[in-house]
Length: 80
Image (cartoon, rainbow, N blue to C red; front, side, top):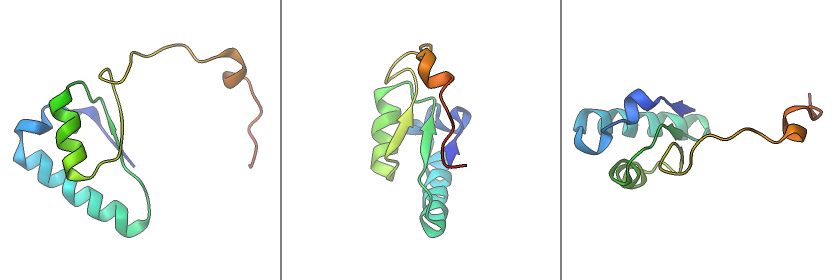
C-alpha cells in the first residue's frame, strides 16, 4: 500500500498525520501487505516514518527520478 506524499510531507511535525499512518500500518499488517511512503524529502520525515514502523520509502531524499533502462521498459511480463 502506498502512502501519498500529501500525507508524508511534514509528518515529523504533525501528530495527526502520525496517528493516521500508525493506523494504516496496523491495517496493512492485519491484511498482510507492506506500506511504502511516497515523497519522502527530508531526514526528519524519514526518521519519523522509521520510528512509526514504515520500512519502505521513495522520494527526493533517496534520489532524483531517472529514465528507466530500455530493456526494463520493453521486457516481457512474466507470471501473468
